[in-house]
Length: 63
Image (cartoon, rainbow, N blue to C red; front, side):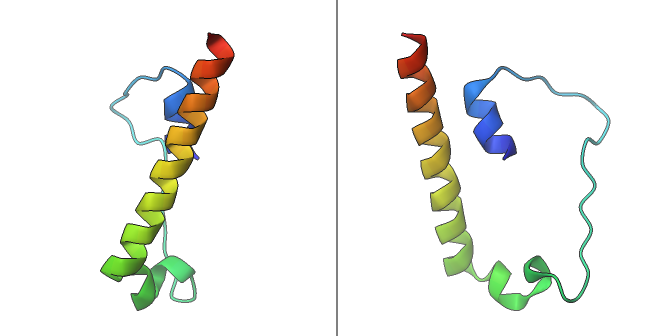
């Protein structure tokens, strides 16, 4: 969600943490499969594709 927002709006950095991420043993992101390189690459590809699509949509809307 944050990556999607970053391609359609200006942002800025602040020194304080804005998010707190916790894991518990039953959570999907705590499982070994979640950190497998193949899974990670697929997720990153999907995130990038969404961000690019949103950016293209925004550029067309503005023009």
